[in-house]
Image (cartoon, rainbow, N blue to C red; front, side):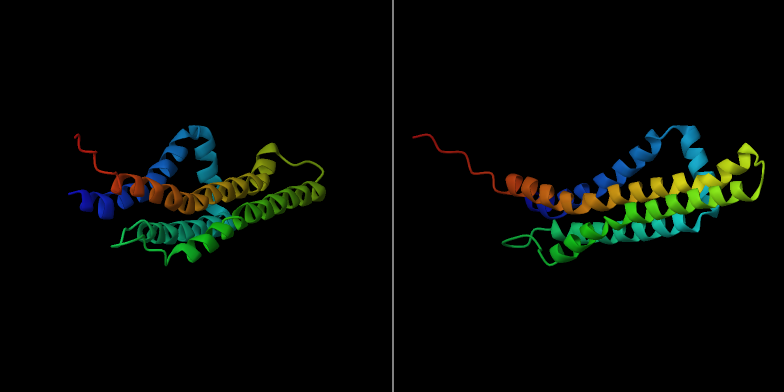
Amino acid sequence: MRTLLIRQVLPTLFCLAPLIGAVLVVIAVPSRALSFYLESIRTSYLDWFILALGAFFFLLQMVLAWRALRWNERTFDERPDPLLQGMYQAAEWFPLLGLFGTVAGILQTFAAIGMKESLPQREIIQLYAPALTTTGSGLLMTLLNIIPLWLVMVGRRVILTLAFTPPAAKEP
């Protein structure tokens, strides 16, 4: 039973935690902000690119994290570690992609304002929305993609602590 817990159950539970955390973050966003975000990203290709790439990286890292948390006979499976390290570093790209979208949204808004003498507030908001949504998308994907490596480091320590509890000393 203990072997099943250490080799299967704990790695699976550790890998489910970030998914539950992501759902909780989305639920915690105020409903108006979430509605605005979801409505605005419908036409933002950069948001879709950030979200798709981030989700792909995250899912791949979770598979690698699950493998890295699996206990073999003598140690953990360390083969996924270099890939996890590289993908952790790649998570730094997402805020940059979000910042690129922010600058593009601001430029788009200023260009439209410069072409017309008067621009309705609603149109300004529509033009400026990508500046906000790409920032949010980049930050969300960064948050998700820095978790797996941390999860492996902490998860391994917890599993080792549980697996190698010294036997109780016998009383003389």
